[in-house]
Length: 156
Image (tube, rainbow, N blue to C red; front, side):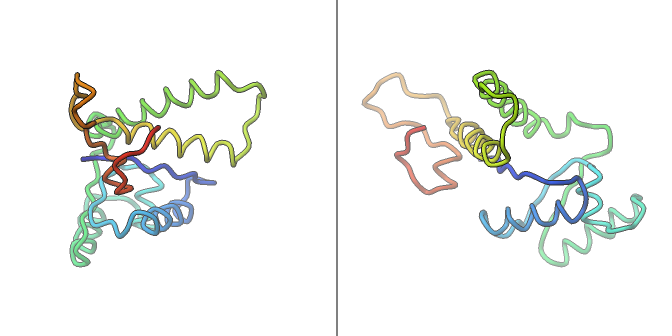
């Protein structure tokens, strides 16, 4: 099963990424496996001030492995390697567009934006893991949201 978690970053620098990653682990638990693209904020967090080379990536992976963790990095310019999360990003974008169309004011507060992202993540995470039953007498399929929250009967 896969689920998404959305965080707002004030800047695209290493410090901001580290704080967001700390918030993620505070909510979801320790992360033993991370897969990302080669974005500069991710790589900066792993290689603080070091030029990114294959040797640096290998060294960092080995350091994470010594801690019992794995950080897989997709090759540069290979967004198709992240098909799973790219699809989730597309779903979130559709939800945001639908929300923004219904906005009456031009600007959204940070609090409104944060709430909207949390709701978008919940919607994406509520996608059933298998086809919905045709009969109302059959229980509903499990979703990643059920697994994250450990709550089975929750309405969107």
